[in-house]
Image (cartoon, rainbow, N blue to C red; front, side, top):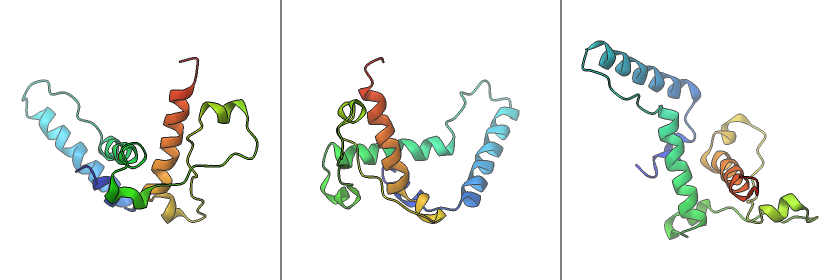
Length: 125
């Protein structure tokens, strides 16, 4: 299940919406059955996002060899500013002009990885 996010990356939104409907129906059936107070399960999108962050961590921090094709180069700063100095390990996010590559694993999770590193580097936290 760790690498399932690589498969979900290119799925169409209508297919993901159908799976979310199925999960919602299952939650309603569980609630209506009177089985007691069950904790709210995580959304399917959350279940797709957590393994995606795990894969990015394995690629960029643990250097797992079979995932190195997903590795993105570091972004080179032309001008050093305070913001760039705070997040020196920012990755080069691939550019894409069509909708399909924007749903792919590398484009989505590299952007989130950059945001996560920037949040961790903020001094006012």
